[in-house]
Image 1 (cartoon, helix red, strand yellow):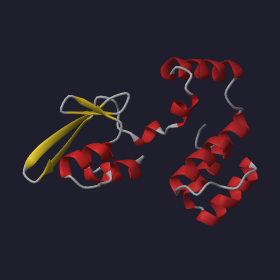
Image 2 (cartoon, rainbow, N blue to C red; image 1 turned 120 degrees about the horizontal axis):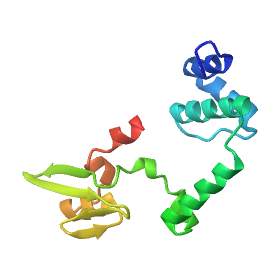
Image 3 (cartoon, rainbow, N blue to C red; image 1 turned 90 degrees about the vertical axis):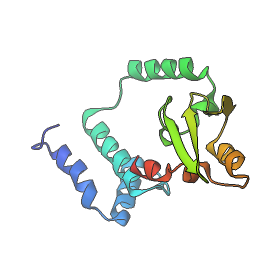
Image 4 (tube, rainbow, N blue to C red; image 1 turned 45 degrees about the horizontal axis):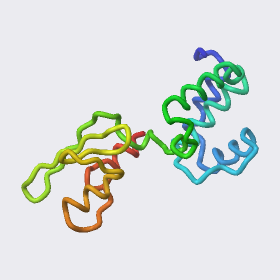
Length: 150
């Protein structure tokens, strides 16, 4: 796709469309109602769809290969596959938070998080253990800005 390509122009034009225009385009290209997600989400999915319609989608062999790789990663657990991993920092990331003069370090693992040598399923449970009150874990560890950038 070069800058002279009309498909490039269509994808680039998504940036200047209004939210209403993006939703209308979604209905035209996807054949469904648009999801209630962010503008960025709509732009990226529509950009992919425009290119897919123009150049063709993934080959069936590629789709099968991706499904096979997914099964190797999650053991065939469909629900695990549906979890949005793009909202979670990369495995091995260390989250550091100072709370009431004490520094707390949490490590992101493939299955969740680790703090003080113990595994946790969520950051919120760690934040609750640290503060003694209910907190949103992503807010406590400052990940909301990270999620918005994604």
